[in-house]
Image (cartoon, rainbow, N blue to C red; front, side, top):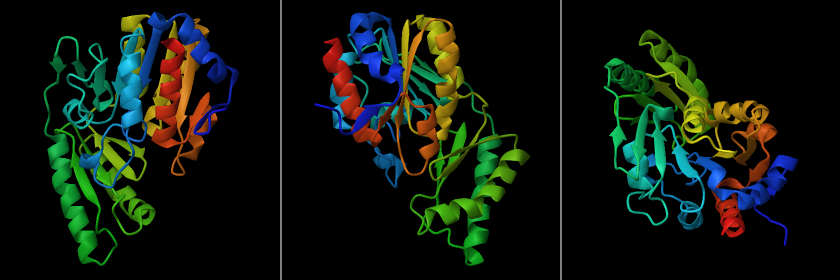
Length: 283
């Protein structure tokens, strides 16, 4: 029966499961969290891993060479919201948070968290003032909220605003200006602008994992513009003889990502079904 929530759109997408089944110990499976392993929700604190993906990863974790989560979130947030500690099958999981600035290894429990500077805290104070000024002037910013990522980044989310797209457009210039004044990197996403103290990308994080684990096959699964640098790394890995598969959790907010896809999934539900099929094939 043909899949209904995901479909391969390239030869690489169609053959990846067969290649993985032949050599599962050579597979590096890297996944984003929000919008990929978990549905996007109005409050980021309400995010939870999709039950289907959790069940599939429990099977894949012991079979594949390496499973990793690469996220813009802080590692502690993903560990907590994904209930990752002690989760069956994920005893060797690696979580790279803040685009690889932070790292947690499930096997050892080791957590790497570099020292936090003061730029993000200063930018947060200005963002609070900006929102207050816009609200006082009658602009529709009610529902906009700030997500402080342990002082290393801050996200300005508009998903809960009455008109999220309009709120994002209204805030864009001001948020970027605050970021520039404090030497922070602006990262756009799905109804969010994030100001980060690091310029590291998910492409950098994925390259680190490839260098560490020397895989023969790599699948990257993501949904947002922040995942694009990781997807863009895959053609260069193919030139080195590494079989690659770009799996995109599609959305109306970021339709352009499907242009780089080998497999297109219908959001996190489709990702869960693709992972379930991959687990079936490599079992």
